[in-house]
Length: 170
Image (tube, rainbow, N blue to C red; front, side, top):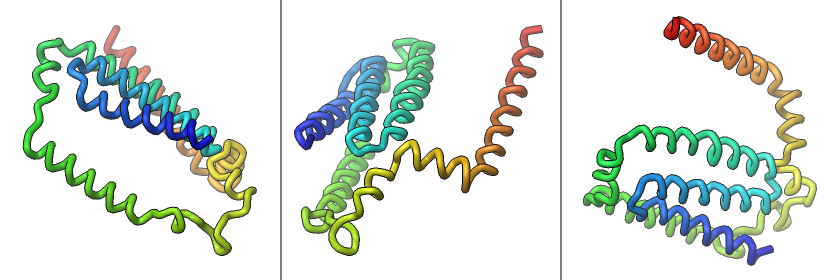
């Protein structure tokens, strides 16, 4: 299982590097889609199936379709003039991010990753975190009012978009 995790971790890092270093914006976007799928696989291995499905559907599906649509609307000359222009600010931001990542990773050693009062959490708690059952139970019990308000707001937004689009095409 650990080997599969390392394979998906390396693939996701390579996909992220592809986003940075590939020349064509479409190739960068497709590399980002691959990274999202690898992250979804890692979530599945962490028993967070709901998060994995949302990762693939929302990010790899909807948001990347939006990115690709915008990229295809842009002319290729306009979009390629900004690719791989490394300024001092970008390099410093990358080095600062790398330093912060190294500091955070240094905080976690093998001994510090043992959690809980006796060194580990009960298996039921670990298996339930991020599961569809737990999210569904919380969503329809403790947060039902918020869920219904969001549903009504989304319905109003869709009706408003249809009304505005209908006026525009008449």
